[in-house]
Image (tube, rainbow, N blue to C red):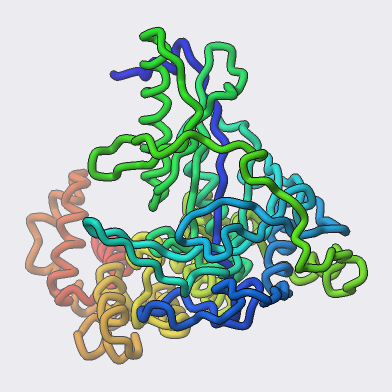
Amino acid sequence: MYTPLYMSAYKPTIGLEVHAELKTRTKMFCSSRNDPDEKEPNVHICPICMAHPGTLPTANKEAVRHVLRVGAAVGGTLADYTEFDRKSYFYPDIPKGYQISQYEHPLVSGGTLAGVKITRVHLEEDTARSTHSGDTSLVDFNRAGVPLMELVTEPVMHDAKTAGDFARELQLLLRTLGASDANLEKGEMRVEANVSVSKTGTPSPNYVEIKNINSFRAVERAIEHEIERQIQLLESGEQVVKATRGWNEDKQETFHQRIKEGGADYRYFPEPDLPKLVLSDLPEFSVEAIRATLPELPWERKARYEEEYNFKPSDSTFVVSDVERVVFIDRVLTLVEGEREVQLAVNYFVSDLGGTPGMCTPETYASLIRMAATDELSSRGVKEVLAVLVAEGGEPKQIAEKQGLTQISDKEELRKIITQMLSGQSEVVAQYKAGKESSLQFLVGQGMKATKGAGNPNVIRELILELTA
């Protein structure tokens, strides 16, 4: 089995910087619409987000609230005093020639998520979107000025999987809080990884920042590749250059973009056009008020499923990993009764629905589970009715009756059928009475055949034992 070099001689150190576009009606510092689904370029713009001379920004209150709620959820320290700063750099997608961000006084400091320590969470504005084709570059300013949360972790991760798991957990948290849809494929969440390696385990100042990563699996692959690249450089006597590198998904490798900037290169200074914020002056931004708005968090929900409903850890993890699954299963749990119905509901949801109910509503799903729990339907019957519910919707009982799937459990009705079946299987009955246990299963199969698959196999087995005693 292949063992990477770093497993034996080198220890990687990984920190993440994650940007997430926030769900607000308007942009960060103006009233232009924040619409990530807009296809027409340059329609949600105004003199402020286009940096016309003499225009003044105004901070978006809802964006501040989103970041504070994220901070409260991860157990961070919410700032009382905070301010915005100018981060200077020139690029065509920055209309002002600088970005309004936060430097010395972020909204959130500290916290922990998925066992990873967080340095800070702050708020800034997004850039425009550039597209390149041959010698032509186009800039769409619809995204310029959209509220952007940046979360920075401590450099405390030492393998790619931990980094990938952290990013997945953050996406789930953002969706649970309603702060962001955080779709990587749409650029609503962007993960950048800072990677260094050393034999001592001490983070190297010559780390590499990897950008252009558009999936969680790509995060892990990019980190793994960069670790191996840096080790090979060191093993050959070369030095790792502190730089920004991109990720080429097709080639599965990182590539050089530019020498990494330092804080001094950005020439941070307090934004003169925005007031300083003292959050204690705003009652709705107090720590208590923010915490009171938090919903049940993913790790709290997972514990509830396991403690109150006896979910298997793998099942609870599967359900909480998607907000829509949670909404569906939480509604179902209010409709089913008893441990048997709960377990059946979870098992079919995970194994057969795969967490995707389609046209099946929680109400019709609960009705189907009740039919399964009362043996009105066999396991095969449940699966067949479920397939129709997902594709077309409808009522379980009507579907079962229409397709002849309703299971017969009435003992007296089945007794007549089983008695007649046994009379034609005298030789097998004799073998069973002589101690051949496999004959019993054969007789149960014959009973199912006689009932055209509609008989309850447990009742059929019980009757065979009774009638052959």
